[in-house]
Length: 585
Image (cartoon, rainbow, N blue to C red; front, side):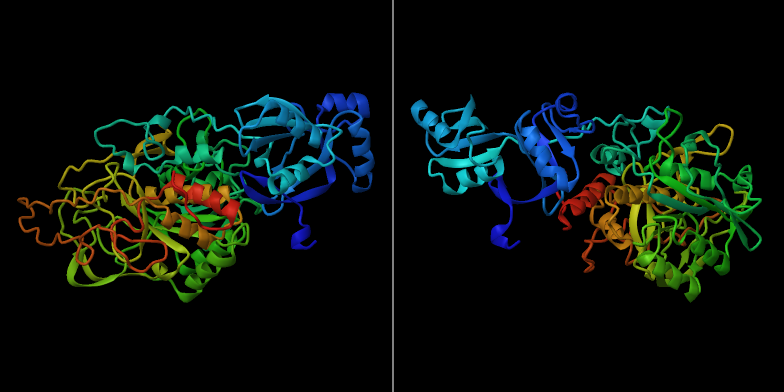
């Protein structure tokens, strides 16, 4: 069909290209009437008075002829470029160029075989087509718009099926304390700018995330039977290392109880931040409707045992099973992985994952109050200066070289920490390589000062089942992972790299740029000149133009505080238009 022959009509002054469905029609009768008079048993009600009937293409015209003996009938139309239904009726609105007399209105109606239904003003009328109207509603609107000199505009009285925005909010007992998800929280240490606005994102999305979307976690394990993970098929899979072997849920002899060890609650808390269920139980995650796939590293005290080969094994396993991977672990001052690992992550970020559109990789930036990718001219501390048991001051360890080669991969985001007062967490790593920040707790890296900041409320594997003191970039990272899952839920056609771009572009820059006082001297440590972080050129948190197409960047906050509402809206916009135009909320 040529451009001139395209089927079209008008809507709010815009020409709309339509597609006529070859196996459907719409009739102004309800399903029970169609069943009684025509024997049609599967009609779909599409308005208060109309139904859509689907039949074989070869039977369409014959069935429509029969339906016209029952009620006004017309083809089913869809908007060509979006495939959205266009539910016309046998009614049209007409706005005349000038006020006209009742005689002129009657003459107009008679000329087109119309019946006047309502008057909305001296120029605005609603008409109904009859069997005397010699054209269907689509053609009538076009004719009146293009050729009738009396008419300023003609519009279909379109039926539009709207979804309700009244998503029921969580009633889980600890939800109102989860300030990082909503702004309905009041506390002297809470600034609403710190919240990720997940609650508003859920309302915009109309759900809590898609169960098709899977977030992977690699950590010290996960309590699979926690009450906040009790949805059917909440886990898309799981696995744990024994020696160099990764044992997964589909392996013979795999034991789900080995996914959790007492006192190793870090991974369980991370999983809760991502996707704890909305089930009126305890806490809620950022993407409660999405599924999880945890992998358990072997642990030795506070450390995880991760080698290049084990990381490759884990990456191979998750390569076609997940959409997002959250990693709340790392090492300072230097952590470089071999090319086999970095190449695999690069490949998976582009073409891997459950959808074949890439995996969004997230890593915690770290809690050392140091750079993550920088060579300094001064000695920069990266430890807290205390013995492992926290009782003896042994002095900070320092380095001039900080390097993490995953920061060079475009599909990997490193997540910094933001306090509940919307300022940088004192311990948060900073500088080149920081992609974004997310709300979490606050504490003084060197344990000398009391700093303001609330902890994150989430699940734990310990008997109390909930902790209100989770924190660090360990908590910030899975929060970003959950929000990435919401963005993908909004538009599963997005590639992982597009999701990364959306998260950066929509991040909030309305933050608190205040710094912290230097560590005060004490009897056991009278000289604190070692406290020099954040070092120049990263000693200010202002956003600057670095030429990044995703917007300005801050050495403290990356592209800003992740914003679930903005990310979901941008994902939906791209779903509707194919263009990355951000609309204001």
